[in-house]
Image (cartoon, rainbow, N blue to C red; front, top):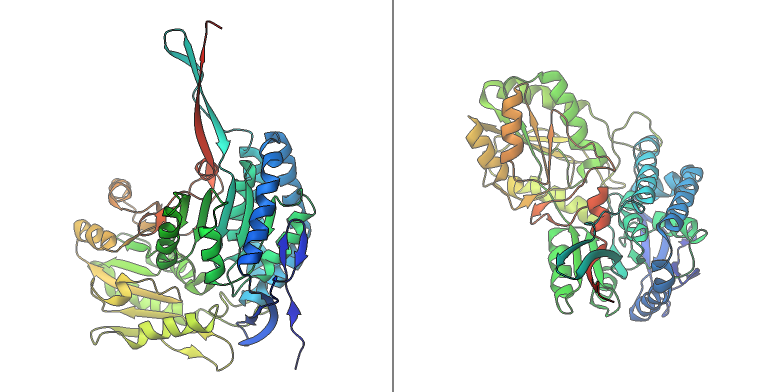
Length: 478
C-alpha cells in the first residue's frame, strides 16, 4: 500500500495534527483511492484556532489599510510564484484539468487578492456633518472581528481567496475550514499566507460538518461565512442566530439560460456548452437549465446535443478535456439519482451514464422534454447535466426562469436590446448575463437572492460585508 500524505491544521502560526489525533482520508476523484489524510478537527482544535485569531485581532485591526495592502500584495505575489505547485495539488485533490486550472483559476485568484489589497484603502463613508445644532457626526467603518469561514469543494483554492481576502483586507482575523474532501490546496495556501502574516491572523482547520458546526456555534467569531449547499446555509444561519452572529451565505443555484429565437444558434450553443459543463457542472452559476423559444427548439436542441456529445472528460493531464471527474462518490450518486428518477416524458438526448469504473467520471448529458415541476428542473444537480425546456413567449420565460427557490445567476440570449433590458429587470437573480454566461470580475459583486443566500462576494460590496458601521457624535462646545 502507498503511504498516505499527511496534511495538518495551521493554527497560531504553526502546523499541527488534530489534538486527539483523529484523521480522515482524502480521495483522488480520478482514481477513487485515498492519497492523503487530514486532521478531523474537534472542539479542542476549534478552541485553539479561535483563541489564536482572537488574540491576533487587536493588532491586525489596528494596522493601517496601507499595511494590510502590502501584506495582501505579498500574498498575491507568492501565490503567483507558486502557481504550478498550487495547480498540481488542486488537480490531485479535485481531478481538474491541469491546463484549465492554471489558466482559469490562478490568474483570477491573484487578481482578486490584489483587488482587495487596493480596496482596503478605499472604504467609503459619509462625510462628517452637523445634523444637530452644536454636534458633529461622522461614521467609522470597522472590522467585525474574528470570522469563521467554511469553503466548498468545487473551487477549493478560489473560494478560499473569496473568503480570506476581503476579511483580511478589512482588518479581521480568520479561521477557515476547507471541505473535508478537498483540504490539500487550502493547507498549502496556509503555508504561503503564513509566511507573510503575523501568527494567528490566518488559521486553517480541517474537518467535517461537525467541525464546521463547532466553528459557527463557537462564542468567539463575530461573523460566519459559508459557501455551500442551501441545507448547510440554513444550518449555519440557525446556529448563528443563537448568539446573533453576522452571517454571509453564498449557497446553491439553478441558473436559467433563456434563449430567444433570434440568436446565433451555433455561437450560443458553443458558449452555453462550455458554461454548462465546465468543472463538470459543479458550479452554482453553471448554465445547466436552458429555456429555449419554441421557434428554434428542434434546431437548438440538436446542436446542443451534438456539442455535448463532442465534449470530453478525462484525466487531468489530457489537454483536450473540458472537465474532470465529479468531486466525490456522494456527488456521483446524486447526479446518477437525478437521471434514474427522470419522468417518462423526459428524453436523454446524450450521456446519462457514468464513464469507467475507476474514479467519478460522468458523461456530458442533455435532457429534453421537461416540465417546470420536474425534480431535475427544481433542484440543483451540480453535475454535467444540461436540461432543456421550451417556452412560447417572454412572460412564460420569465415565469419559468423565476419559478425555482434559487436566485443566484441567470443569462439572456437575444439580439433584441430592449428585450434584454426588460429581462435583466424581471429576472429575480443576483447576476444577469446577456449573451454570455459565467464570467466574473473582481470589481463586480457576486451573490444571490432567495434560497441562494445573502451577502456579496467580490467587489467593494464584498469588502463592506466584512465591516461594521459605528456612529460617532461629538459636541462642538468643548
